[in-house]
Amino acid sequence: MSEKSSNSSGSDEDVDPESGHPVELGGVLSKWTNYIHGWQDRWVVLKNNTLSYYKSEDEREYGCRGSLCLSKAIITPHEFDECRIDISVNDSVWYLRAEDPEHRLRWIDSIELHKVESGYGSESSLRRHGSMLSLTSAASGFSATSTSSFKKGHSLREKLAEMETFRDILCRQVDTLQKYFDGCADGVSKDEFQRDKVVEEDEDDFPTSTRPNGDCLHNNNGSKEKLFLPASPKGMNGIDFKGEAITFKATTAGILSTLSHCIELMVKREDSWQKRLDKELEKRRRVEDAYKSALSELKKKSHYGGPDYEEGPNSLINEEEFFDAVEAALDRQDKIEEQSEKVRIPRLTPVPPGDAYSVIGTHRFAKQVEDVVQNHMTYSLQDMGGDANWQLVVEEGEMKVYRREVEENGIVLDPLKATHAVKGVTGHELCHYFWDTDVRNDWETTIENFNVVETLSDNAVIVYQTHKRVWPASQRDVLYLSAIRKILATNENDPDTWLVCNFSVDHDNAQPTNRCIRAKINVAMICQTLVSPPEGNKEISRDNVLCKITYVANVNPGGWAPASVLRAVAKREYPKFLKRFTGYVQEKTSGKPILF
Image 1 (cartoon, one colour):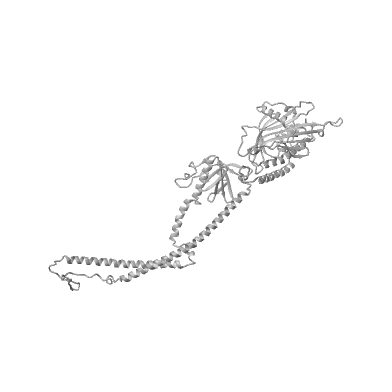
Image 2 (cartoon, one colour):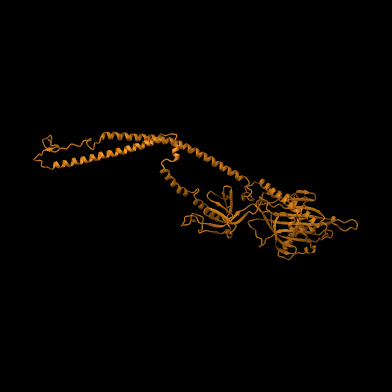
């Protein structure tokens, strides 16, 4: 996965140093499109708190295919898939996969950084906006909410008004008392100055100390000195100190009483608000519990477009729902096939002579083909009678389908074997139409597309094909070598045997991809033609021809589909396939010369 940004990590360092905003991040992520196309690579861009995606980086100029605002987005790293991120906004969900866990972590960090910058759910945004809210609340004194809360009791407001009045009175009294104290201090200073002056005079003259009005004072021991009486309290600027002191005491007592009353009212109001807060917290808890419960229920329900409900070890869909969904999808395919058969245009493909198919090839897979052919001729034609491991699961007329249950590491590997007898066609004709890729789509309804990767010889090709997806199972593809052979009989009384074997191989031009699960197969159709003698001198007609078919299939589907579903689908589809194919060959060969 390629990414482009000005930094190498999606952490707090992914911030533009000039603007302080997170930088743009772009790169390739796999996005879940739908259950048909699955995961597809898309160019994803994270910019300005918005996540957008484009089909590719080259197509950005044509506009994005979708975008999400991350302000209220919920980012959920997947519990089991270490490369997956789920981003949901209301009902819209994006399922994204990074190349590895490190890239996923980088994207998660970058997305969270953009969310923080947008101001939703971030601690820094609360710090940025919280201080302004606090200042506004403080400046307003009492907000509208606070005022409304006081409507039930006006005593607190009244007491606060009293506090304002007491404050004004107290300030005036403090100013008055301060003036009185300043006056007293000035008077004492003057008395001390005059007393010092009298002591310094000549004591021998015994001067007479006179009052300001001329009176002479004598002390008790007969000495004379000037004495100055202290200033009268009432005479100091006309202030009644005693009265002011009493008033000051009353004011402070009133303030203390009012404060006590305010505290009592606030305590009661705090209890009321605490009860309201407790109720709100309880409501919030109930809402959160309801949300978690609803989210849990939502996860239990099948969401047919999401990757969590497709095939996988941690799928949220249970086995019963898985089976119902597969069965419903197969029923829809059957209806589509019935309609397409009405308008199908038959192709004319000549059947080449059998001699060309009896030779062993010389290509690089020749020995492997020969080993597979001999193995099928040895074991596939053996009778199942008496073998308790084979279970008869379907019997419809001449058709019988057997199964032997085999599991390896939890994956169903049941070998299947079917026997059938079809009138009017030969083994050569049946094997030709089964092998010929030109008519494959005329009778095979489970294939989405296929192509011949390499032609090895006239009777051997390497084919790559993808099968139609049956939701919720993942889509499968298969790469196999297909060879057709004619096995000459060693006894003149035994019929010749025609065989088509398809077995998985590897090829550089068809490597496995993440889009499909690569299945492994080893399939063979073995046909023997029996001819009953015609009456009299009549020529052999198709009424005298009977083809015995043995079809064996060993398939490793890979993936995590439930065993019960795989077995049920095999039991349903194999008989339908045989009847559909043999009916197609009978229709193609009807009225044409018999080709042995």
